[in-house]
Length: 254
Image (tube, rainbow, N blue to C red; front, side):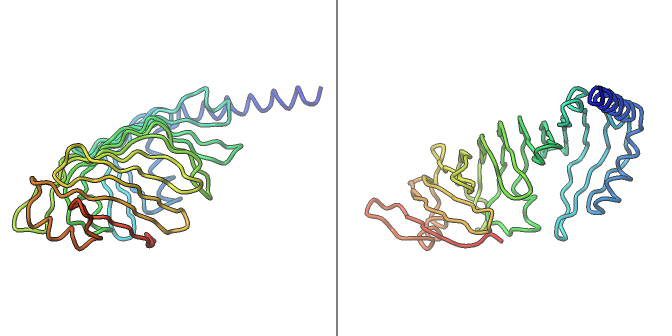
């Protein structure tokens, strides 16, 4: 009898929370997020906490700013009953965009992100990582799961489109590339390959959550590759008999 009453009270509380989400204005979200994390700034919110949008979303990371542009979200009602709130998110900042479905498991204390689809220019990384390459990165990740300690699952691909070498008087074409994502133990594994690029790539990158990485990759120097790029690439590793360059590097990314 007691368990039945406790279950009824629990359901009523969930329905009450759902009612608050459905009726509370979206303008409360910027205030709440700013109180929890001053690095997140949302502007001009409309709609409700259940289904809303903001005209601008900015995230400050170590002195640099990520502009997500317009952001909209929708909470799935049934997910609250399962104690796994799920939110569909869409952001649009022109050439930079992102779509994803985020689920937070309140019981398992884990986050799962599905159907990640988006793109961004490599130039947005410049405030944190000086790059000599320009181009577009496309995200096609079916599933990404993690908790507060480690990465639990990842399935998907990254595409690098029409990369250019910028360490010359003018941009020099490198080509397009693919990185297949998977887990190798606790490490994130990227299987790297090219798409008939001027600079061929074939190898593996392992990234450890502890902060280390290992890169083993063969770089193919085709006839289409500019001499300036060839001269720079040969210093990255050991020249093989077939003319390619073998790069084996171990280091730390943080």
